[in-house]
Length: 141
Image (spheres, rainbow, N blue to C red):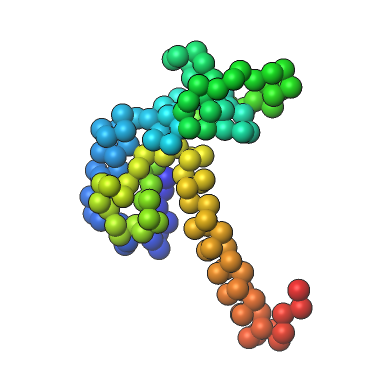
């Protein structure tokens, strides 16, 4: 996952090597949340189930065997390409201890970061409201 330019200075110079070690050497190219393999295109459902072509079974959002989808669920199946990212468990990009890093696919990374994203969204809304009050008068909506 690309790093925003304004956040790049939080990361160490050898971040690429640390990330490669976490994703491919330690995790073996698999998501540590659900077990999806890096670089593969997998069939998945909205509830998090995905088809493991190697073992020819469906897996749930934690990588455990799950029930096969019925016809109605199969109509809503989609395909996605899995890309792994090294995720900071404490959301602090300056804390690069190996115990603080996990290999996550896009879905697991977004689920892990959801509370952090919601907090940041609230701060953004409050800042916009304050700027509106400052320059445009009381915020109407």
